[in-house]
Length: 167
Image (cartoon, rainbow, N blue to C red; front, side):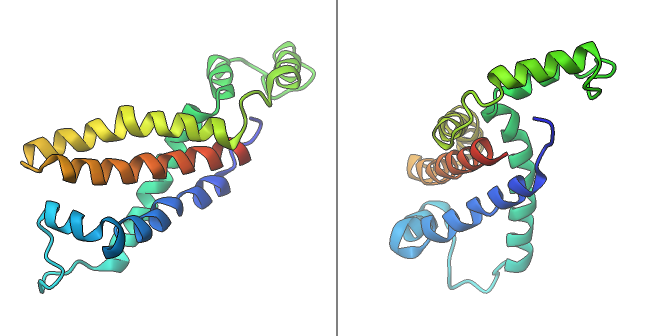
């Protein structure tokens, strides 16, 4: 946990775009999603797709930053020591304690499988309820909720796996 590897966040932020290309393809869930959401592919009011994909990537980067401490348990240890003086000095008492802790426990639960588990839990327990609440007020049906929630559960699972394994 000595370095927060932003490049892993940037790579993992591509996952929602890639999953979206598959998930919302008309041959997968695209037609069902369009029907449930009321999107008309023939309408003349198409969005600026460069802007949509750019913002999707940007928001996915933000999600990756927040997902990292959820899928990597060692962040809890470092958050408890955030105000410790000399934590980065390897000769200080705090620096020695951090080194000893990381030598003993630094690689525990640092697998793709474990990160995917926590990503899945985050999708089910955080993303899905947010989507469902919005959908209820938008008067959307269960199909709409399940299609969108499924997409986010899979995206967050894969993002969590990549972040936990490689960060």
